[in-house]
Image 1 (tube, one colour):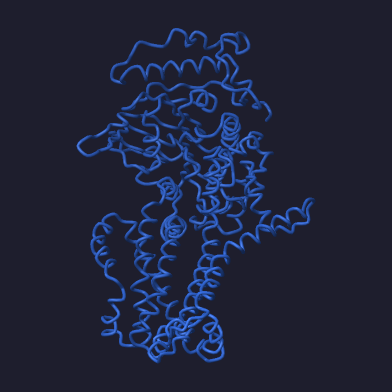
Image 2 (cartoon, rainbow over the protein chains, first blue to last red):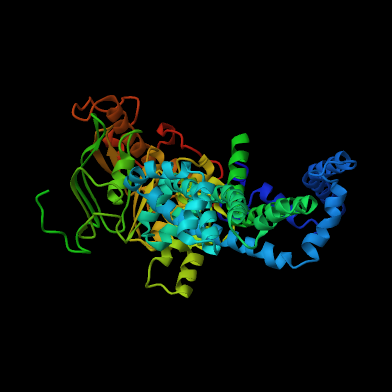
Amino acid sequence: MLSAPAATNGTKAVVSVRSETDSQQVAKRPAASSPGGGRRIGSALGRAAWWTAAVFGLPFGLLALWWVLSADSETFYLPPLSEILASFDDVWLHSDRLAADVLPSLLRLAAGFLLAVVVGVGLGVLIGSFRRVRAFCEPVLEFLRAIPPPVLVPVLMLFAGFGNTMKVLVVLSGCVWPILLNTVEGVRAVDEVLTETCRCYGIRGPARLWHLVVRSASPQIVTGLRQALSVGIILMVISEMFAANNGLGYTIIQFQRTFAVTDMWTGILLLGLLGFLLAMLLRLFERSALHWYFGLRQSQRDDGQR
Amino acid sequence: MNSTALPQAGSGPLLDVRALRKVYAGRGRSVEAVRDLTFSVGAGELVCVVGPSGAGKTTLLKCIAGLLPPTSGELVLEGAPVQGPPPGMAVVFQEYGRSLFPWMTVQQNVELPLKQKKSLDKARRRQLVRDALAAVGLADVPDAYPWQLSGGMQQRVALARAVAYEPHILLMDEPFAAVDAQTRADLEDLVRSLWQRLGVTILFVTHDIDEAVYLGQRVLVLSASPTLVLDDVAIDLPAERDQLGTRSSARFGELRAKVFGQIQRAKGARPTDPAPPTDPALPADPEHADSDPADSPADVPPPRQSTDAGSR
């Protein structure tokens, strides 16, 4: 272990934080006014350039390819990308569609997703904590999970009508499974020594639930969230295609039915863009909620190499 | 066993283990880990439990900690039978990497158990955390995460958490088995100084004979599994111990040899079938017991380590 020599001096040598953590901290504030800062800024710029190229290279490449290939397109269903981008402005920004369609869609997605988090994590903790409950629930869970959520749309329409409730329920019904199943796995894998530590120190009830169970399972829970988000976006659109009077899915279907093919393509682009932004948002959340996990993994890897 | 008259709190032993037996029942096969353990620990004592590996030391400790129900026998702590983890007890586990919460900073780790004690207000809690971290020499890393620290320092955090909890009895399960030898010497001295300062009762389980003799006032020698108490060795070394002097004293060598002989015997034979006594190569002779430590340093087995140990 790297810091073992430091620890031999006991109380005095608590220069503990490992060197890789130091370098991480330095990386976070590259403009620190220390000697040799110039080189650091240089390498940070290099890294930023590399990162930008890595993130935007492929998307822009594909867009360029689309642009070139579709430039002379005469096909009615495949208008040139230049036309699509030109009408993007008019269709979405210079109209009230952001407020009238995009916002309601996002709100329904958010409501369904958040409800799925509450239900999925809550039930997941319950099922994961007790072996008997798990044995009891598992067959039913496997059955319910196997039903494709879009099939539920007609059924839910019967119960919940055509309004927002139905759409939120559709999103919920799809998002809940990845969250639930991942939470169960995470809760099952809670470390035994940590569990005993909690018992010894009288940590129980809500404190145990949060500080031990949920935090232990949080890496798996976040994996579930990521899967649920992509399912949720799909279901948001599908629920609006069935029966709605606003929303992104509804608008895209309307464009298609009225043969406004270029406008339809702008909707598809917008949908992709939204999905990307939401995934980024989730990534940010993951970074802050699981920074301990990445640090722990990194330090375990480093120990393994030594 | 038959005693229903519990000892008065304060007068009798703090911890009483009577005819403890633990059998792990598996599928079609059961393993008797602990056969018959009887001993007691007085208030304020530092008792080491040593035995060959696989001797059921951890089983014993988990039973005392209330984490495992014994198959039969009695466990009495401060006059009350142990039925679950008792409130006045803290435990330091061997696997420091797994007993600290990796999502909490050092300070949060130490503070969490205190938050469960309703009698402590926030200021007092913070004070206890600060004092405990200072006592183990970690006052300047409260905001680090455990995985940013070396193994020895992580175990110091676990120790600080136990100390801040203000237990009456502190159980330690091979706490230093996974740290390097030099860090270990420091941690041993830390345990002794905490014990002397706080007056807490400590039951220290280890497989290391030197460590047991160096730390303890008494050393309980366990047999191989299924476990019995083979011997209860009083360690009459001076209260002020240091890694270099104590470990190279003649008395230390004798005590070490005595315990070593018992362990060898324990390994060689089943506990029901006691083997002939000690290995003749070792100076386990009780006649040497009163010899002057300075007299015969040449007879003494070399101390386990000496580098850096005298620096305190």
